[in-house]
Image (cartoon, rainbow, N blue to C red):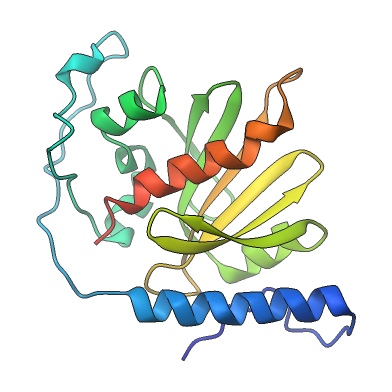
Length: 197
């Protein structure tokens, strides 16, 4: 079974041991929850302009389109559809930018700047969680690792492979409370996970 351990260096200390234990438990839960269910991928189509109304989004009973993680990694802004954007209160489509490891998509959600990556290496997660307060949190039907550091929140989820993580980085606007930072990133991640097959 693969091990999702953010710090493999022997450094001792109770907090590092707790983080390692939490991460091992997360991997166990994630591995047990993976399924081979296959869905049909959403057809590629150009995004409507930001002036498109939320009423054009699918009804709440509609099943979300499904992609593989690899398909979405190259076009991360497709990870949220019109229904997701309306439900999250995001106006307009995300903005795709080049990231250090892969393309990232950025959205603005209630004063929070949320970035999404869909194929992040474990080494990146280790770097981003090194000095933060680390916890295991539920994200949709999955368990995730969340870390907060200097008002920034990182969330990492392993769906099929602990070396290919889905992650959000959330940074609040100036003057916006940090209390909504992790919930915003978790909400985006949970919506994205409904589209991963």
